[in-house]
Length: 130
Image (cartoon, rainbow, N blue to C red):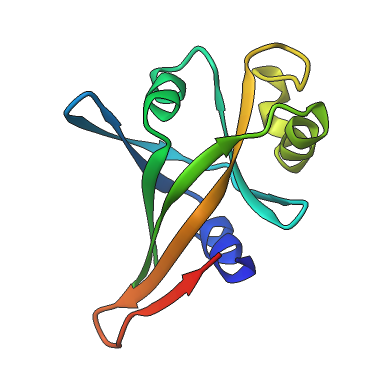
């Protein structure tokens, strides 16, 4: 899991895919955090992505850096504890202008049943599960 976290942090931007009915939706994300040995991402409850995850928690993300890419598939589980939200925002203080752990909007999710695949054009893919 730490390797997945490091790759996402180094890449800076990753693309999260959800479904909206029968329509795939992909958008850029940048938040990733490890809290209590779980990999977390963050969004706002008012965003369509939040509603899409609530309807179908199976997601996939993809990031690319230096000729290598990561695909991470799994289920997102909301963690509604203040400590989890605070940990994320402490890791991204620049978001505090838009989010606060007590605002009723900030939402964090951790990955469950995750499978990460690291790949490149020059080597065999490597898969990690957590």
